[in-house]
Length: 416
Ligand SMILES: Cc1ncc(COP(=O)(O)O)c(C=O)c1O
Ligand SMILES: N[C@@H](CCCC[NH3+])C(=O)O
Image (cartoon, rainbow, N blue to C red; front, side, top):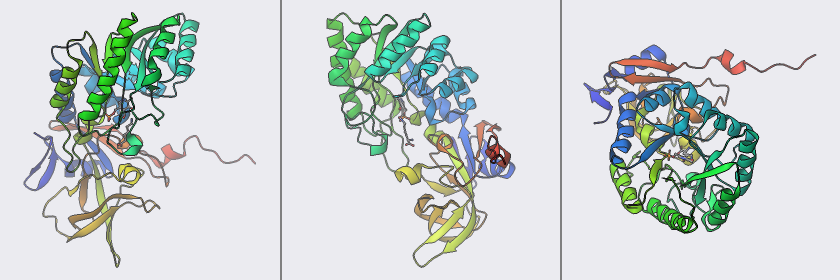
């Protein structure tokens, strides 16, 4: 059952009315459901029961400390892409031994800190990175656990900006050259080969591309075994899509079952790096209508959230559902472009939406739990929104709304 339900015409998250949160905290405000996040993680864990596995939540999707904390308490590991994300995991009480470090541009200092904390492995994305990691590890007198991220040249059939597994993408090591890089890794004294990794993109809505990528990885795993290089784990990345509108992605259990079947009886621990499928539909962005405006062509609802708060519609023309929080609050029924106050024509949350609105209407932008707050900015000197986590009948402000003082901190005028 969804954590978001309507009762007597009011939208609730778990047992809390969204109007109560908006009334107390103001808008724009992100609101997340603890139960929804936990249920999604549990779906991964239970579908993986009976095989060695680790679910490493992709921190980039929603990195709030409270979110990381609740997932860590339920056994999640973490996929990180920066030293900053590593410090977040530590601050949230996550176990570094369950952290995998992805990303094409890791820096020596980030590697050193990850080695110091004893992370589980580095997903190395280029031969140059491999050499740097070896030298950093040797300089610190430790051995770095290594997995190579292979690029299998598979079309993820998603938006081109979030497709990562094609040859022309910057990610991973061309699978045709991967064996040579493994051989090189085996020669380097500062490295220990532990696995193979792949992540072909985000918001995938069918299992086919995942299965193609895994097939390519398994070919390489078998070739490595023939050369005496055995791997402990296979990391198939993240990328499972969610339903924002009419997409029909496989359920988490179906997706896992398909991948487990593809891996078969091989003695490999399975690692996953899901982000969106854990948090996207566990969150909404609350926003208030400030003005209604009519032009010859369009009806505009000017709301207090903007592209700086939630950039997915502007950046990917992503469609997210927008609904009024209170039914029957009255207003003008029509087709509205829901737009923010930022000075860009791309500043919209949704276009052509059938809604009944009046100034003051409270709206919920659904599917905002992933790649929402984390991608927000201070463009137009707008403080970033508050974040609230609902837990049953209780709710907690897990990030305060920024103030203008926060925005000006660290800036200074020219000296005389
Ligand atoms: C390396 C890596 N792993 C995992 C993820 C999480 O992807 P998703 O949120 O689509 O599950 C991403 C983002 O696409 C990523 O770049
Ligand atoms: N930011 C993207 C997902 C990117 C995934 C990063 N590897 C989105 O909002 O859909």
